[in-house]
Length: 290
Image (cartoon, rainbow, N blue to C red; front, side, top):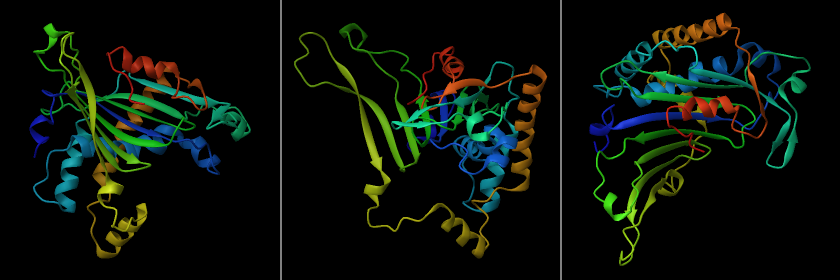
């Protein structure tokens, strides 16, 4: 209830969704070289996260109501234009101090398959018009992390500007892996007499789910799904029209790559991807959350 009035284009500047992996092929050579990062991760995992962030509140928490709202978001995804995607492929590097081979070395042959993709997406509806969604996923990243970052807009006027204080916009970070947590960054006044001006600093409010529910039995990812399957609850399962909408969007992106003759840029294993991915966000004044 607290966030719902702010959950729109009037108050949110942009959204970032990152799914980073430290692993390489890990025995999935044939599948991954055919699929690539966009079909392996973006088509399902990342678009489902985007839909959950952007969906309207369902009338009920049941399979039909929830999936009806998700598919509306997926159908509202704007076609991605040239220059709104970056692909990459990792080369030999180091992760956590250990040397790791490049993608072609692991594969045993040269390949144009992308192991990294960054996309600037838009949801063209009333709530989200004009709010970019930056999606990023890749293998051989510096750390394993799945998170959603909601960047709120700056205040229209800072009452502390004349006092030498700098305001930063609020930020909500929803951590999914490796640990579930929520962090809300707010501005707080640094204690003191303020004789040399007011000083403000970003202060995080943290909710660590593991600490908040320390007595609860933690379940592995598929336990809940298997139980829902047995009980016939399809709320957390993807419906056919969702899958079709996701593939329509992904296939259009891949067709654009083919038409442009786009090949992956290289990046060193243990980095956050090719420099072009940084530029994709920075040209809009956005910095990836790391």
